Image (tube, rainbow, N blue to C red):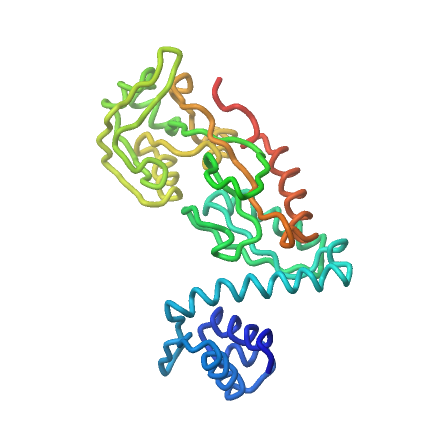
Length: 304
């Protein structure tokens, strides 16, 4: 078996953490997969997997080799695809990542539409609230909220969001409407650490920047939970505008302290150019750009 074929077996086994799973995917016998991995380890002179009775896991050397092997195989696939005309018709697997709630609310509908348009495409979506290097993780496209730090990545700005303070109509009718950030001291505060990890909240206005130290009575590590609590009428919270845009439209939440909101935070579609910018990537970026830029909840200045 040549080196490229061995790499394919290795990558399948690594992704599934199973030689049996790799054998089923590749239509090989499990012993054949075991022999292929042993051959690859022998040629490299390193151990790639730690084996147990239930699963296999990459060693530190195996993890480094996995990242490089996956990239090499993807580049080979792109070169071969170009010869077959795939750069004109999207095919293959598209890997997309986005923040959890943003992905659920705005990216899932785009992915479904993209799959309907292109029957030969498969999508692997990973939503999490952390920023990672898309090359290291083998992602094709990432939705990023915030200022970009890596200049090697190509980005298309599609909108902007803001940190917004809000409460339910019922709560505000009972406890009054804060007119200044300092008034938050008189209210029950719900905090989402995913948006505000600190109990010091910063605001901006025509008078400049100001900070207020809040004392949350209810704290969550997830935005969904904070949204549920504030909608129930328990108190006031601070979230990202895209997370509660629908609630503002329906009237189930009221946006307050607008004149003290910080400057907008950019939303970008990030992807890698070069060989990996095939038809599947370009087509998805074009569709996502159109849908997101036309979404009134994320593509306008939120400050009044």
